[in-house]
Image (cartoon, rainbow, N blue to C red; front, side, top):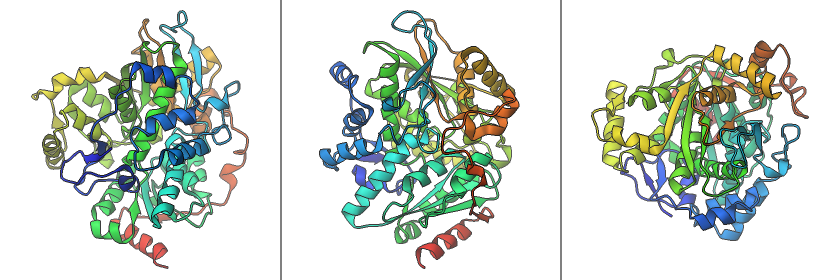
Length: 485
Protein backbone atom coordinates (compact mmCIF):
# COMPACT_ATOMS: atom_id res chain seq x y z
CA UNK A 1 0.00 0.00 0.00
CA UNK A 2 1.43 3.34 -1.09
CA UNK A 3 0.47 6.71 0.33
CA UNK A 4 0.06 9.87 -1.74
CA UNK A 5 -0.09 13.54 -0.79
CA UNK A 6 -3.34 15.42 -1.33
CA UNK A 7 -1.27 18.06 -3.14
CA UNK A 8 0.40 15.62 -5.49
CA UNK A 9 3.97 16.91 -5.28
CA UNK A 10 5.53 14.44 -2.83
CA UNK A 11 6.81 10.95 -3.61
CA UNK A 12 4.71 7.96 -2.65
CA UNK A 13 5.54 6.39 0.71
CA UNK A 14 4.79 3.25 2.68
CA UNK A 15 2.99 3.26 6.03
CA UNK A 16 6.06 3.15 8.28
CA UNK A 17 7.64 6.00 6.30
CA UNK A 18 4.75 8.35 7.07
CA UNK A 19 3.87 7.02 10.54
CA UNK A 20 6.32 9.26 12.37
CA UNK A 21 5.52 12.40 10.41
CA UNK A 22 2.64 14.78 9.83
CA UNK A 23 2.38 16.93 6.74
CA UNK A 24 3.83 15.70 3.47
CA UNK A 25 6.82 17.72 2.17
CA UNK A 26 4.52 19.59 -0.24
CA UNK A 27 2.25 20.70 2.61
CA UNK A 28 -0.45 18.16 1.84
CA UNK A 29 -1.79 15.22 3.84
CA UNK A 30 -1.18 11.56 3.12
CA UNK A 31 -3.91 9.21 2.00
CA UNK A 32 -3.71 5.66 0.62
CA UNK A 33 -3.55 5.52 -3.16
CA UNK A 34 -6.89 3.68 -3.03
CA UNK A 35 -9.27 2.59 -0.30
CA UNK A 36 -9.43 -1.17 0.28
CA UNK A 37 -12.92 -2.49 -0.40
CA UNK A 38 -14.83 -4.58 2.12
CA UNK A 39 -17.02 -7.43 0.84
CA UNK A 40 -20.15 -8.95 2.34
CA UNK A 41 -18.02 -11.96 3.28
CA UNK A 42 -15.58 -9.69 5.11
CA UNK A 43 -18.38 -8.10 7.11
CA UNK A 44 -19.82 -11.49 8.03
CA UNK A 45 -16.43 -12.78 9.18
CA UNK A 46 -15.43 -9.62 11.02
CA UNK A 47 -18.68 -9.39 13.00
CA UNK A 48 -17.53 -12.31 15.18
CA UNK A 49 -14.08 -10.93 15.99
CA UNK A 50 -12.74 -9.32 19.14
CA UNK A 51 -11.92 -5.63 18.84
CA UNK A 52 -8.19 -6.34 18.70
CA UNK A 53 -8.56 -8.90 15.91
CA UNK A 54 -10.95 -6.62 14.03
CA UNK A 55 -8.31 -3.90 14.29
CA UNK A 56 -5.75 -6.24 12.79
CA UNK A 57 -8.00 -7.24 9.89
CA UNK A 58 -8.75 -3.61 8.99
CA UNK A 59 -5.30 -2.16 9.61
CA UNK A 60 -3.58 -4.94 7.69
CA UNK A 61 -5.40 -3.62 4.61
CA UNK A 62 -3.52 -0.33 5.07
CA UNK A 63 -0.22 -1.58 6.55
CA UNK A 64 1.82 -4.07 4.56
CA UNK A 65 5.31 -3.10 5.72
CA UNK A 66 4.94 -4.53 9.24
CA UNK A 67 4.92 -8.35 9.40
CA UNK A 68 1.39 -9.64 10.00
CA UNK A 69 2.28 -11.47 13.21
CA UNK A 70 3.89 -8.33 14.64
CA UNK A 71 0.92 -6.14 13.68
CA UNK A 72 -1.52 -8.62 15.21
CA UNK A 73 0.54 -8.67 18.42
CA UNK A 74 0.57 -4.86 18.57
CA UNK A 75 -3.22 -4.75 18.19
CA UNK A 76 -3.71 -7.36 20.91
CA UNK A 77 -1.28 -5.52 23.21
CA UNK A 78 -3.22 -2.28 22.70
CA UNK A 79 -6.88 -3.22 22.83
CA UNK A 80 -7.45 -4.88 26.19
CA UNK A 81 -10.18 -4.56 28.79
CA UNK A 82 -7.52 -3.41 31.26
CA UNK A 83 -6.48 -0.45 29.10
CA UNK A 84 -10.08 0.46 28.22
CA UNK A 85 -11.63 -0.40 31.56
CA UNK A 86 -13.19 2.95 32.52
CA UNK A 87 -16.62 1.88 31.34
CA UNK A 88 -20.05 3.14 32.26
CA UNK A 89 -21.75 0.99 34.92
CA UNK A 90 -23.19 -2.09 33.27
CA UNK A 91 -21.05 -1.87 30.13
CA UNK A 92 -18.79 -4.69 28.98
CA UNK A 93 -15.15 -3.59 29.01
CA UNK A 94 -14.12 -6.56 26.85
CA UNK A 95 -16.08 -5.00 23.98
CA UNK A 96 -13.62 -2.05 24.13
CA UNK A 97 -16.27 0.21 22.50
CA UNK A 98 -19.62 -0.89 23.97
CA UNK A 99 -22.89 0.37 22.51
CA UNK A 100 -25.35 1.89 25.01
CA UNK A 101 -28.92 2.10 23.76
CA UNK A 102 -30.79 5.17 24.97
CA UNK A 103 -33.82 4.20 22.88
CA UNK A 104 -33.83 0.66 21.51
CA UNK A 105 -36.05 1.54 18.56
CA UNK A 106 -38.36 -0.83 16.74
CA UNK A 107 -37.68 -4.54 16.35
CA UNK A 108 -34.36 -6.39 16.07
CA UNK A 109 -33.08 -3.78 13.58
CA UNK A 110 -33.49 -0.98 16.16
CA UNK A 111 -35.33 1.15 13.60
CA UNK A 112 -35.44 4.73 14.79
CA UNK A 113 -33.26 3.84 17.79
CA UNK A 114 -30.72 6.08 19.48
CA UNK A 115 -27.45 4.79 20.92
CA UNK A 116 -24.09 5.96 22.22
CA UNK A 117 -20.88 4.36 21.04
CA UNK A 118 -18.60 4.44 24.09
CA UNK A 119 -15.18 5.57 22.87
CA UNK A 120 -13.89 7.20 26.05
CA UNK A 121 -13.07 4.27 28.32
CA UNK A 122 -9.30 4.56 27.93
CA UNK A 123 -6.73 6.05 30.29
CA UNK A 124 -7.56 9.72 29.57
CA UNK A 125 -11.34 9.26 29.24
CA UNK A 126 -11.48 10.57 25.67
CA UNK A 127 -11.94 8.99 22.25
CA UNK A 128 -8.40 10.02 21.31
CA UNK A 129 -7.16 7.06 23.36
CA UNK A 130 -8.64 4.68 20.80
CA UNK A 131 -6.00 5.59 18.24
CA UNK A 132 -3.29 7.07 20.40
CA UNK A 133 -2.63 3.95 22.48
CA UNK A 134 -2.00 2.03 19.27
CA UNK A 135 0.15 4.84 17.91
CA UNK A 136 2.34 4.71 21.01
CA UNK A 137 2.97 1.02 20.49
CA UNK A 138 3.51 1.46 16.73
CA UNK A 139 5.98 4.31 17.30
CA UNK A 140 8.01 2.30 19.78
CA UNK A 141 8.03 -0.74 17.48
CA UNK A 142 9.09 1.14 14.33
CA UNK A 143 11.72 3.24 16.09
CA UNK A 144 13.22 0.13 17.67
CA UNK A 145 13.27 -1.63 14.29
CA UNK A 146 15.01 1.34 12.67
CA UNK A 147 17.29 2.30 15.54
CA UNK A 148 15.89 5.84 15.50
CA UNK A 149 14.43 8.45 17.82
CA UNK A 150 11.62 10.96 17.32
CA UNK A 151 10.49 14.20 18.91
CA UNK A 152 6.74 14.53 18.69
CA UNK A 153 5.40 18.05 18.31
CA UNK A 154 1.66 18.43 18.67
CA UNK A 155 -1.12 20.88 19.44
CA UNK A 156 -4.21 20.15 21.47
CA UNK A 157 -7.49 21.86 22.18
CA UNK A 158 -8.06 19.54 25.12
CA UNK A 159 -7.98 15.79 24.62
CA UNK A 160 -5.32 15.01 22.01
CA UNK A 161 -2.53 16.21 24.28
CA UNK A 162 -3.31 14.02 27.26
CA UNK A 163 -4.05 11.02 25.05
CA UNK A 164 -0.71 11.43 23.27
CA UNK A 165 1.21 11.92 26.48
CA UNK A 166 -0.34 8.92 28.21
CA UNK A 167 0.35 6.82 25.09
CA UNK A 168 3.99 7.94 24.79
CA UNK A 169 5.03 8.37 28.44
CA UNK A 170 8.00 6.17 29.22
CA UNK A 171 8.28 4.93 25.63
CA UNK A 172 11.80 4.34 24.38
CA UNK A 173 13.24 6.79 21.84
CA UNK A 174 10.28 9.21 22.03
CA UNK A 175 9.92 12.74 23.43
CA UNK A 176 6.63 14.68 23.35
CA UNK A 177 6.38 18.48 23.07
CA UNK A 178 2.69 19.37 23.37
CA UNK A 179 1.27 22.86 22.77
CA UNK A 180 -2.07 23.89 24.28
CA UNK A 181 -3.99 27.20 24.52
CA UNK A 182 -3.15 28.84 27.84
CA UNK A 183 -6.18 28.94 30.13
CA UNK A 184 -8.56 27.57 27.50
CA UNK A 185 -8.94 23.96 28.66
CA UNK A 186 -10.96 22.56 31.55
CA UNK A 187 -9.24 22.11 34.91
CA UNK A 188 -9.42 18.32 34.50
CA UNK A 189 -7.83 18.46 31.04
CA UNK A 190 -5.01 20.69 32.28
CA UNK A 191 -4.37 18.42 35.24
CA UNK A 192 -4.22 15.32 33.06
CA UNK A 193 -1.45 16.84 30.96
CA UNK A 194 0.47 19.11 33.27
CA UNK A 195 0.65 16.67 36.19
CA UNK A 196 2.72 14.15 34.23
CA UNK A 197 6.29 14.13 35.52
CA UNK A 198 7.82 11.75 32.95
CA UNK A 199 11.21 12.87 31.62
CA UNK A 200 10.09 12.53 27.99
CA UNK A 201 6.98 14.74 28.32
CA UNK A 202 7.05 18.54 27.86
CA UNK A 203 3.99 20.81 27.99
CA UNK A 204 3.92 24.30 26.43
CA UNK A 205 0.93 26.60 26.97
CA UNK A 206 0.74 29.31 24.29
CA UNK A 207 -1.03 32.60 24.96
CA UNK A 208 -3.61 32.21 22.23
CA UNK A 209 -6.19 29.84 20.77
CA UNK A 210 -5.81 26.27 19.59
CA UNK A 211 -5.45 27.47 16.01
CA UNK A 212 -2.40 29.52 17.04
CA UNK A 213 -0.85 26.40 18.56
CA UNK A 214 -1.72 24.38 15.47
CA UNK A 215 -0.20 27.05 13.22
CA UNK A 216 3.07 26.84 15.19
CA UNK A 217 3.16 23.06 14.67
CA UNK A 218 2.60 23.53 10.93
CA UNK A 219 5.27 26.22 10.72
CA UNK A 220 7.83 24.03 12.48
CA UNK A 221 6.89 21.06 10.29
CA UNK A 222 7.29 23.19 7.16
CA UNK A 223 10.85 24.09 8.19
CA UNK A 224 12.23 20.98 6.56
CA UNK A 225 15.81 21.46 7.76
CA UNK A 226 14.71 21.84 11.40
CA UNK A 227 12.26 18.96 11.06
CA UNK A 228 14.97 16.67 9.70
CA UNK A 229 17.66 17.69 12.20
CA UNK A 230 15.41 17.32 15.23
CA UNK A 231 13.43 14.36 13.88
CA UNK A 232 10.05 16.06 14.40
CA UNK A 233 7.11 13.67 14.38
CA UNK A 234 3.38 14.27 14.73
CA UNK A 235 0.46 12.72 16.55
CA UNK A 236 -2.19 15.32 15.77
CA UNK A 237 -5.14 14.16 13.77
CA UNK A 238 -3.21 14.93 10.57
CA UNK A 239 -1.15 11.81 11.35
CA UNK A 240 -2.45 9.08 9.07
CA UNK A 241 -1.86 6.37 11.67
CA UNK A 242 -4.45 7.99 13.92
CA UNK A 243 -7.04 8.21 11.18
CA UNK A 244 -6.44 4.58 10.20
CA UNK A 245 -6.87 3.39 13.80
CA UNK A 246 -10.10 5.38 14.13
CA UNK A 247 -11.63 3.60 11.13
CA UNK A 248 -11.77 0.46 13.28
CA UNK A 249 -14.36 1.72 15.74
CA UNK A 250 -16.77 2.66 12.99
CA UNK A 251 -16.86 -1.02 12.04
CA UNK A 252 -17.03 -2.09 15.69
CA UNK A 253 -19.86 0.38 16.32
CA UNK A 254 -21.74 -0.83 13.28
CA UNK A 255 -21.49 -4.45 14.42
CA UNK A 256 -22.56 -3.48 17.93
CA UNK A 257 -25.66 -1.66 16.69
CA UNK A 258 -26.83 -4.12 14.02
CA UNK A 259 -27.60 -7.80 13.63
CA UNK A 260 -27.35 -8.10 9.84
CA UNK A 261 -24.62 -7.02 7.46
CA UNK A 262 -26.98 -5.24 5.08
CA UNK A 263 -28.48 -2.90 7.70
CA UNK A 264 -27.79 0.79 7.43
CA UNK A 265 -27.03 3.17 10.29
CA UNK A 266 -26.55 6.89 10.72
CA UNK A 267 -23.56 8.01 12.78
CA UNK A 268 -23.39 11.39 14.51
CA UNK A 269 -19.89 12.69 15.15
CA UNK A 270 -18.93 15.80 17.15
CA UNK A 271 -16.21 17.32 14.99
CA UNK A 272 -13.73 20.18 15.14
CA UNK A 273 -10.62 19.17 13.19
CA UNK A 274 -12.48 16.69 10.93
CA UNK A 275 -10.19 13.80 11.93
CA UNK A 276 -12.76 11.62 13.68
CA UNK A 277 -15.43 12.01 11.03
CA UNK A 278 -12.82 11.65 8.28
CA UNK A 279 -12.26 8.11 9.53
CA UNK A 280 -16.00 7.53 9.23
CA UNK A 281 -15.92 8.87 5.68
CA UNK A 282 -13.16 6.40 4.80
CA UNK A 283 -15.03 3.51 6.46
CA UNK A 284 -18.05 4.42 4.33
CA UNK A 285 -15.89 4.60 1.19
CA UNK A 286 -14.58 1.12 2.04
CA UNK A 287 -18.14 -0.22 1.94
CA UNK A 288 -19.36 -0.05 5.55
CA UNK A 289 -23.16 0.51 5.34
CA UNK A 290 -23.22 3.97 6.91
CA UNK A 291 -26.15 5.81 5.38
CA UNK A 292 -25.34 9.28 6.71
CA UNK A 293 -22.50 10.88 8.63
CA UNK A 294 -23.95 13.62 10.82
CA UNK A 295 -21.30 16.29 11.42
CA UNK A 296 -21.99 18.09 14.70
CA UNK A 297 -20.18 21.32 15.54
CA UNK A 298 -20.37 23.80 18.39
CA UNK A 299 -20.53 27.57 17.95
CA UNK A 300 -17.42 27.30 15.78
CA UNK A 301 -19.50 26.11 12.87
CA UNK A 302 -17.07 26.27 9.93
CA UNK A 303 -17.79 22.65 8.94
CA UNK A 304 -21.54 22.99 9.35
CA UNK A 305 -21.42 26.09 7.17
CA UNK A 306 -19.58 24.19 4.45
CA UNK A 307 -22.00 21.28 4.33
CA UNK A 308 -24.97 23.66 4.30
CA UNK A 309 -23.64 26.23 1.85
CA UNK A 310 -20.67 24.80 -0.07
CA UNK A 311 -18.43 27.59 1.28
CA UNK A 312 -15.38 26.76 3.39
CA UNK A 313 -14.45 29.85 5.41
CA UNK A 314 -12.08 29.34 8.36
CA UNK A 315 -12.19 32.03 11.03
CA UNK A 316 -9.33 33.96 12.58
CA UNK A 317 -8.29 33.32 16.16
CA UNK A 318 -10.11 36.50 17.17
CA UNK A 319 -13.31 35.13 15.61
CA UNK A 320 -13.01 31.70 17.23
CA UNK A 321 -15.42 31.28 20.13
CA UNK A 322 -14.35 29.94 23.51
CA UNK A 323 -17.07 27.41 24.34
CA UNK A 324 -18.07 24.79 26.86
CA UNK A 325 -17.13 22.05 24.37
CA UNK A 326 -13.54 23.30 24.07
CA UNK A 327 -12.05 20.37 22.16
CA UNK A 328 -14.02 21.63 19.15
CA UNK A 329 -12.98 25.28 19.47
CA UNK A 330 -11.31 24.98 16.08
CA UNK A 331 -11.90 27.03 12.96
CA UNK A 332 -9.30 25.49 10.62
CA UNK A 333 -10.22 21.85 10.17
CA UNK A 334 -6.88 20.31 9.24
CA UNK A 335 -8.23 16.94 8.07
CA UNK A 336 -10.83 18.55 5.85
CA UNK A 337 -8.29 18.56 3.01
CA UNK A 338 -8.42 14.76 2.94
CA UNK A 339 -12.16 14.82 2.32
CA UNK A 340 -11.89 17.55 -0.31
CA UNK A 341 -9.28 15.44 -2.12
CA UNK A 342 -11.88 12.68 -2.47
CA UNK A 343 -14.66 15.16 -3.28
CA UNK A 344 -12.77 16.60 -6.26
CA UNK A 345 -12.03 13.16 -7.67
CA UNK A 346 -8.53 12.94 -6.12
CA UNK A 347 -7.27 15.72 -8.40
CA UNK A 348 -4.28 17.14 -6.52
CA UNK A 349 -4.07 20.14 -8.87
CA UNK A 350 -7.57 21.16 -7.83
CA UNK A 351 -6.74 20.72 -4.15
CA UNK A 352 -3.61 22.87 -4.49
CA UNK A 353 -5.64 25.53 -6.22
CA UNK A 354 -8.32 25.56 -3.54
CA UNK A 355 -5.80 25.84 -0.73
CA UNK A 356 -3.91 28.59 -2.55
CA UNK A 357 -7.21 30.41 -2.82
CA UNK A 358 -7.78 29.80 0.87
CA UNK A 359 -4.40 31.33 1.70
CA UNK A 360 -5.08 34.32 -0.54
CA UNK A 361 -8.74 35.12 0.12
CA UNK A 362 -9.55 33.24 3.32
CA UNK A 363 -12.19 30.96 1.80
CA UNK A 364 -13.29 28.93 -1.19
CA UNK A 365 -16.72 28.38 -2.68
CA UNK A 366 -17.66 25.17 -4.51
CA UNK A 367 -21.10 26.38 -5.63
CA UNK A 368 -20.02 27.28 -9.13
CA UNK A 369 -18.09 24.05 -9.59
CA UNK A 370 -19.16 20.49 -10.46
CA UNK A 371 -17.95 19.35 -7.05
CA UNK A 372 -20.93 20.90 -5.25
CA UNK A 373 -23.23 18.46 -7.09
CA UNK A 374 -21.11 15.50 -5.90
CA UNK A 375 -21.39 16.43 -2.26
CA UNK A 376 -24.69 14.63 -1.43
CA UNK A 377 -23.22 11.32 -2.62
CA UNK A 378 -20.80 11.35 0.32
CA UNK A 379 -23.65 11.14 2.82
CA UNK A 380 -22.88 14.14 5.02
CA UNK A 381 -25.45 16.19 6.88
CA UNK A 382 -24.62 18.69 9.60
CA UNK A 383 -25.74 21.01 12.34
CA UNK A 384 -24.41 23.11 15.19
CA UNK A 385 -25.03 23.49 18.91
CA UNK A 386 -24.80 26.31 21.45
CA UNK A 387 -24.06 26.47 25.16
CA UNK A 388 -27.76 26.64 25.93
CA UNK A 389 -28.38 23.62 23.67
CA UNK A 390 -25.61 21.78 25.46
CA UNK A 391 -27.09 22.39 28.90
CA UNK A 392 -30.57 21.41 27.72
CA UNK A 393 -29.28 18.21 26.12
CA UNK A 394 -27.27 17.18 29.18
CA UNK A 395 -30.33 17.73 31.38
CA UNK A 396 -32.71 15.95 28.99
CA UNK A 397 -30.38 12.96 28.56
CA UNK A 398 -30.01 12.54 32.31
CA UNK A 399 -33.76 12.92 32.89
CA UNK A 400 -34.86 10.57 30.11
CA UNK A 401 -32.19 7.88 30.25
CA UNK A 402 -30.30 8.31 33.52
CA UNK A 403 -27.09 8.88 31.55
CA UNK A 404 -24.68 11.80 32.05
CA UNK A 405 -22.89 12.85 28.86
CA UNK A 406 -20.07 15.29 28.28
CA UNK A 407 -20.47 18.58 26.47
CA UNK A 408 -19.17 17.37 23.09
CA UNK A 409 -21.36 14.29 23.06
CA UNK A 410 -24.23 16.61 23.97
CA UNK A 411 -23.50 18.53 20.77
CA UNK A 412 -23.68 15.24 18.87
CA UNK A 413 -26.98 14.29 20.50
CA UNK A 414 -28.48 17.71 19.84
CA UNK A 415 -27.61 17.68 16.14
CA UNK A 416 -28.61 14.02 15.79
CA UNK A 417 -32.04 14.83 17.24
CA UNK A 418 -32.72 17.07 14.25
CA UNK A 419 -31.68 14.35 11.80
CA UNK A 420 -33.28 11.20 13.20
CA UNK A 421 -35.14 8.89 10.85
CA UNK A 422 -37.68 6.21 11.77
CA UNK A 423 -36.10 3.73 9.33
CA UNK A 424 -32.57 3.49 10.74
CA UNK A 425 -30.86 3.76 14.12
CA UNK A 426 -28.51 6.63 14.84
CA UNK A 427 -25.29 5.99 16.72
CA UNK A 428 -23.77 9.03 18.46
CA UNK A 429 -20.03 8.75 18.99
CA UNK A 430 -19.37 9.51 22.67
CA UNK A 431 -16.17 11.50 22.58
CA UNK A 432 -15.29 11.98 26.25
CA UNK A 433 -16.48 11.28 29.76
CA UNK A 434 -18.44 13.97 31.53
CA UNK A 435 -15.93 14.41 34.36
CA UNK A 436 -13.55 16.11 31.92
CA UNK A 437 -15.96 19.05 31.79
CA UNK A 438 -17.04 19.15 35.38
CA UNK A 439 -17.83 22.87 35.48
CA UNK A 440 -20.45 22.67 32.73
CA UNK A 441 -21.97 19.45 34.08
CA UNK A 442 -22.33 21.15 37.45
CA UNK A 443 -24.03 24.11 35.73
CA UNK A 444 -26.41 21.81 33.86
CA UNK A 445 -27.30 19.33 36.59
CA UNK A 446 -26.31 20.94 39.87
CA UNK A 447 -24.27 17.86 40.73
CA UNK A 448 -20.87 16.35 40.13
CA UNK A 449 -20.46 14.02 37.15
CA UNK A 450 -19.41 10.40 37.72
CA UNK A 451 -15.65 10.08 38.23
CA UNK A 452 -13.98 6.73 37.51
CA UNK A 453 -11.74 5.13 40.11
CA UNK A 454 -8.23 6.49 40.08
CA UNK A 455 -9.14 10.09 39.17
CA UNK A 456 -10.27 11.30 42.60
CA UNK A 457 -7.49 13.80 43.31
CA UNK A 458 -6.18 14.55 39.81
CA UNK A 459 -6.52 18.35 39.96
CA UNK A 460 -4.56 18.47 43.23
CA UNK A 461 -1.41 16.91 41.79
CA UNK A 462 1.68 19.09 41.15
CA UNK A 463 1.73 20.50 37.62
CA UNK A 464 4.52 21.67 35.34
CA UNK A 465 4.10 23.64 32.12
CA UNK A 466 6.05 26.27 30.17
CA UNK A 467 3.96 29.34 29.24
CA UNK A 468 4.98 31.11 26.02
CA UNK A 469 3.82 33.77 23.62
CA UNK A 470 2.61 32.69 20.18
CA UNK A 471 6.15 32.50 18.81
CA UNK A 472 7.49 29.84 16.44
CA UNK A 473 11.11 30.74 17.18
CA UNK A 474 10.60 30.38 20.93
CA UNK A 475 9.11 26.92 20.48
CA UNK A 476 12.03 25.89 18.28
CA UNK A 477 14.47 27.17 20.92
CA UNK A 478 12.66 25.17 23.60
CA UNK A 479 12.90 21.99 21.50
CA UNK A 480 16.60 22.59 20.81
CA UNK A 481 17.34 23.12 24.49
CA UNK A 482 15.70 19.85 25.52
CA UNK A 483 16.97 17.71 22.65
CA UNK A 484 20.56 18.97 22.51
CA UNK A 485 21.25 18.90 26.25
